[in-house]
Image 1: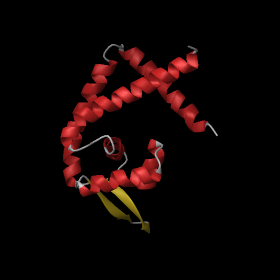
Image 2: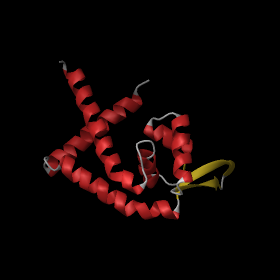
Image 3: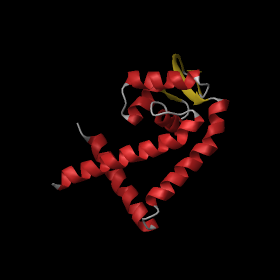
Image 4: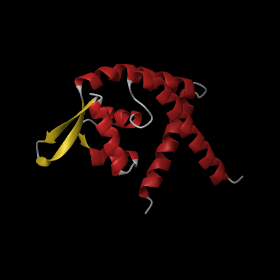
Length: 142
């Protein structure tokens, strides 16, 4: 197996495993495979449009719309009119959604500690920097 195939396979396994474990932990909070990562992104990007979140997650607009509709029906997210453009709606956590944030951060931190606990702090920084470089290279591709 060449290096490109090996790296691709390992990154895929890491991504799928992380998602599976995170969703398993978040399901009792009402977040499922189809909504969890949209909610997580909105935690960090409140006031973004649906299109901006879709671009950040590299997801299509239809999938993003369905996820946020479900989150809105659950009472976890609300849409507000953009004060600068009345045609746009911006996404925010509802009060009910905001109450989940501390618990979600606990889950994320625990998962991160379990995953990265085998790496020294220096290795964790190196790993993070390398992943960031790979993501930047991907985003710079035509």
